[in-house]
Length: 459
Image 1: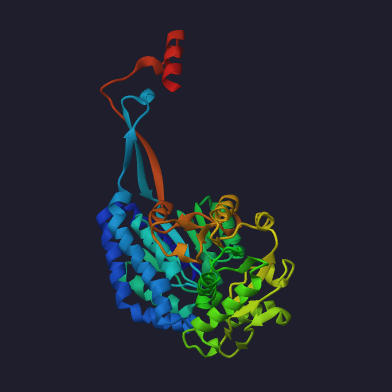
Image 2: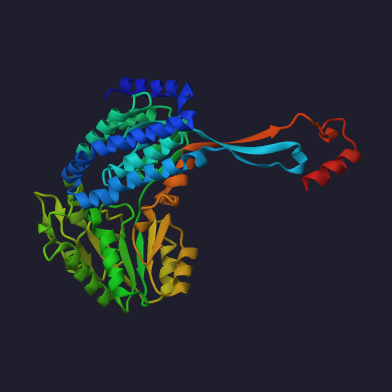
């Protein structure tokens, strides 16, 4: 799409927003219902597209993408009137007579840029939040998941006039043109490298922005953990979507006393969940493209592989792979893995291990498996991270009742549920002043008596 066409879309959306229709709560409710109906009409197309782009099974596609989007829509429909209402409270005595009002208001025209790993979920879920908050929106899905991107465009075109919501397909040129536009809010999910570019454009145009990035999310397992359950849940969180999950456990940091037992159980759980030959499992996914496939293969150290390591270049599939006796200096520990490779590191002293983690860039997620409440409390209090699970992995992202987002190098801003509504809303602070009484002490001329009264009211 040419830059002139993109500029036209943004201009028309701004003009439509200025009409004030999207400020009405019922208008937003009707929009969300149209979106839900369109998703249900195109549901099988979404599953087919996810299978083509990422090899996802229908069960995984519903559980991790379609179902979560439908849940978010349902949550917004249930709560949108409450979220949209003015929030009032009595003013301070110094302001008497007055009422304080916080008025949630849409920003205007927003840009949503989504990645390829969960292309439907990470395009539509923030769009649901933006829509509920009363914005118009332009969605730019990833060029790396072209089949899903095409279905997303069909769903949006089926539900909305382009001046309300539009999908821009394409690659870098289209993304660059969009970033040059003066949106009222920008929401980006993807890599840190591209996130920096988005933030640079946002800074140049003074546009508020949310960045949902990634990082190396640790999974701590201490010597009190229930090993079988820990391994089962780690394997689920790590290898779903072939490891291409921003909140997947990037690596395990475990007590050296239980390292061998944990690795053995992880191998057993891989076989239990994916079969003795995962590459023959039709429900096991694939790497998105050859570039990422080759990158992942370069991270595998055959000398440290204790399970897996096999691949199918023609199908872009890499077996669930476990590496043992990994060191912090190994190449696999220098970047986010984003694939089905699980390195295992061991520690001798728990608190020293936690101190080391705190010297690393803040991760998007952190997981700890332990039966020791003090150990869990120490990690969740001392470590900085976007979100966490104790004795589980990735499940904190599957609810509309908690916000989700990163911190530091893993991102800024949150969404999901109420947090998502607030992300796409500007909260106007308004003093509603009464006119039936006007206290004279704030006006000139001042006197010692007035100064004393002012001091009394403001303390």
